[in-house]
Amino acid sequence: MGSERHTSVDEHTRSILVPHIGRQGAFVDALHDVQQAFGYLPEQALRVLADELKLPLSQVWGVASFYDQFYSVPRGRNIVRVCTGTACQVRGSQAVLQRLESVMDLKNGETSADRAFTLETVNCVGCCGLAPVVVINKKVVPNRDVERVIGDLPKGNEGDE
Ligand code: FES
Image 1 (cartoon, protein in one colour):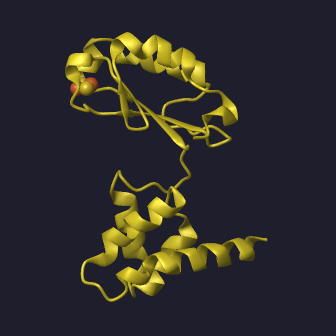
Image 2 (cartoon, helix red, strand yellow):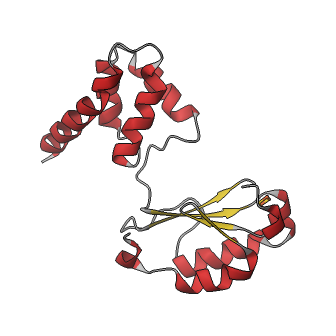
């Protein structure tokens, strides 16, 4: 079972890497493409990437773990971010976060077991006039709508898009 899964990850990763083989500076682009395909960077995919791009695995791991935009664990299909930038802090983002943690039964940084949701915080998203702000997937939700959005959050598998 485990080796079948590896084979599938290996094949998928190799197909993703085809356009990057032999290309100068392809490494970070390749990481992005692998993450786009899997939703995160599976360890086995990083091994294949290191092998295909002829890079030391330690370098691949180092870069993948250094940048915030790369994820080493699976994330939810829906990403709920509470802005904790200064303006949002001043206007009650901690209370919004606590409320969402309660409603979603998740702590900050956690993903639900069914992988429908990830709850996390984000720094200023540039909509300070709407503070406190929640971003659901890529949609900014202003203060006046937070209560409705909390109430409308789908539960369990309803989160599938
Ligand atoms: S501090 Fe939250 S949008 Fe700027």
